[in-house]
Length: 245
Image (cartoon, rainbow, N blue to C red):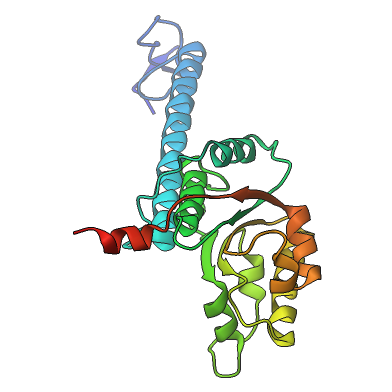
């Protein structure tokens, strides 16, 4: 409380230091008008601080996603250059994409995996699904490694976590041995993501015409409906690297 004066036997607060009007009895001594102004200023400052803290948390979350997805690998700095994929990322950010998944296909060594990472990293850069929560949203799985993990003794009991991943990078679809068991597991994975309209970025060496035989007609049908099909072309970069002096 501020200093109080005795006037006619009553306690009176100090006058407002801003205008001389009777204060509310607090320090600094301020009238109702100037108390409200100070409170509004404080609220504005708190709001600015909250926004800054939220932005900091979002930035940290994005950095965590990049590290978790590609940190320390050759793909950590993958940059998106394909205009078709750039347009898709923009549409995803704006919520206007007709297809929420992408199928990257083409020959060996032409950079499909690089493009897959570039798409995902661009989504993270554009803050797609990234908020202040530290929950990881992006995950990359090789189809062969994933299926091996699901076999007895492989270390993975179910597909539940993979299916639930908000943004899944599925690499090398179609190179796995096409047994009834593998096709059932792939169907379980793709169908659940198809039903959930979940974002899946897929790379494959198979053409759309070869896909039904490679993964089964049920999986191929869902991929056709859920994915933007993007053919990639170019020389085998691995062979080019080996041929360099």
